Image (cartoon, rainbow, N blue to C red; front, side):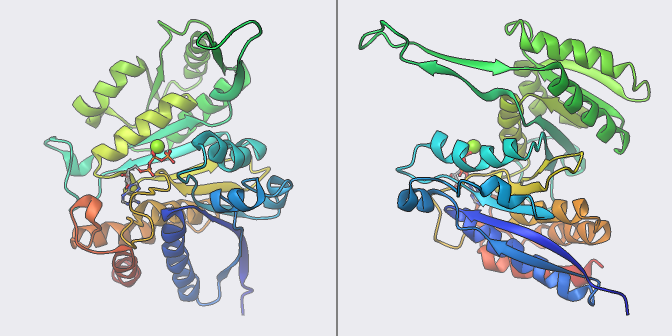
Length: 362
Ligand code: ATP
Ligand code: MG
């Protein structure tokens, strides 16, 4: 008999609905492993890090937390954030610490228009829309460079500086990643997003690198846009979008816009990849901890379950990943949805339906 391949997963549910949607995703993953007939299994270690941990221990994660992650095949992440803990503390103390500590420099965020979901977008071909946002995940506006309270400034006269870091290496690797990804897509097209008319150093460097790298991909259509115009483009001409590559901040904003257009923030998956695979990659839904609905069992689990599908694909379980994506689409097609997308089902109901539909779409 063939030996069972065991994948080691680090699970970080985090705060709020993070815990609920991760539980849903794990239920689905366990089912998929059971159905594999011993071909593969998941060995999971759960880390209780997040804001509750912070309130108790004064830190979001263990000091050697990043180091601890290195022994795993992948990290499955919920969400962090809690009223009473400043967002920058929770974000920097855990999520960004892992992303940057493990150099997960490519954040991939597919925007999928699932069947049956009420749209926020009035578009004749709305059911065929889908594109993928590639977010630079290691530098840019989230480099943490700057400071407050410069010498000699009294009360009411405070000055704060927040710098964005753009390196040629950082720009080049994410832009190249976007072109490589475009080659695997139906339409070979990359749209690069900056604001180089107003940000004349880092973003001009980005534009120059984009122009240079694009020459190596004559088979891929290359286009550049300014972020304000691209925001309008998302709404007005989404059918033209295929791979969109942008800096840390701009892609963060555009991904919320994209997922809201597709129906809900609760639907959007994401992968924080180290494409060179020196360290484990991290898979998480795009949404936050949503304190307004936490603890009620009504969070949409699809973003997190679709992130699990991206994790399966990253682990080489391509067939299982595709099957899971089909099961998700079949579930929304049947109208089994949470309230944020106009349904009446709860987290558990949607999760069970997805598990049921795994067999139906095989
Ligand atoms: P962060 O600062 O972590 O990005 P945020 O302030 O953007 O978080 P979210 O927690 O993402 O906020 O929530 C934004 C809104 O979307 C909230 O009203 C929340 O209830 C809703 N929402 C987010 N995720 C889901 C989900 N999975 N299911 C249902 N509603 C959701
Ligand atoms: Mg947000």
